[in-house]
Image (cartoon, rainbow, N blue to C red; front, side):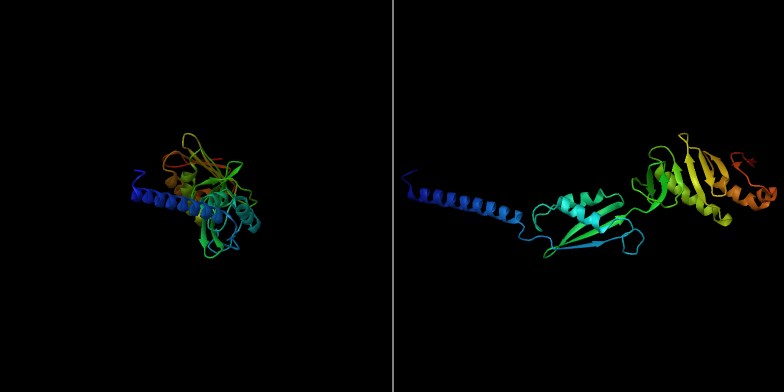
Length: 234
């Protein structure tokens, strides 16, 4: 082989090309890691109410999330890591991050819309998802087994619509481990609805309110609607 000049030339050329490719690759990686294209602009979109403005997440929180994960340059920035950093902010439900040439990032955030308090230390959004965030908003309280938040949000919507003619609001809603429902109204009345036919029982309460309950001429503290054809009050 060593006497074959053509083979030696081919081997030398091949080695030269391989070395050149390795040098070029190493140089390109080093160049990309340098801040030759730093992020110069940051645009933020998104809201919780369709207004295009964020209600809870602040500009300072967004910039802090960017700086905490800003490693490399505009071209090498890990967008998935950046998205996860935004997703950890208390009020962020969904986050997306995109590059915009030449040197800007576009951040789109969807905030949670708090529907109720979940127990004593969490919130539940309109999708039935629980999350942790601080809020001084007056909200109804949901109390139920782990994993029942979606069912409680759906049932809350049904009960709220049924109560609309009476202009009564739900202040608290309880779901027991045996799936029995109890509703606390803003007028101080507690409705015992049980484990089945909750909607029809709530409708019975609404229908009876003007026909019989209101005629009692006193504030009721408790209405048990689990009877087949009536209810008990106290």
